[in-house]
Image (cartoon, rainbow, N blue to C red; front, side):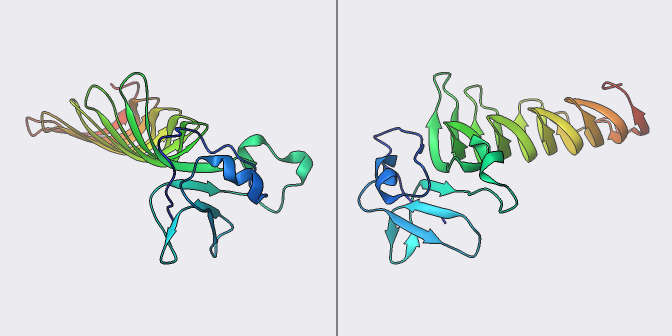
Amino acid sequence: MVVESDSSSNTACDSSPNTQQQQKGCGFKEAHAVKRGRAPDNCLGREREGEGEGEGCIERPAKRAYTPSTLTERDTTPRCYSTLTYPTGDVYTGYNMDQKPDGYGYMVFVNGDTYKGEWKEGVRWGAGTSTTSEGVYTGTWVNDSESGTGVCVYSDGACYEGEWVEGERSGHGIYDAADGSTYVGEWCKDK
């Protein structure tokens, strides 16, 4: 569920997830709504007719297997869903923690490139699609680089489908060149 936050306060939702008094400082308009679904996540924010509306915080409590002594700050910090505009001009809409992309979201970079997919602590990490002037990559990301399996359709019409390591074609892959030729085999550092 998505709920609405007061965008004029421009605060990250850094409240503790367990007391209503602390939640009031989270920068939300009007009354707080706490919605508990089948999943253990809690949503804080505005409701209309029993449904979440707009932006807000998602609390993601730690898994039950953890004991309080083993919890990290990341395990207990609530995520927000909002639009963030960075000093560089980049605009991010999606889940974030401490004003860094974290979870699923969409980034429009000032140069016109876009990325839609999973983030972890401010970097692309997980499944996602990047669109640049060079082409469109859909696949797995690790630490802000194409890593794992993915497909890239280049702006000249060429296409590569296969394995990637740190942003380069590495491992088994199929490359269909713009001239119609095809290479099937092993790649190492984009060659």
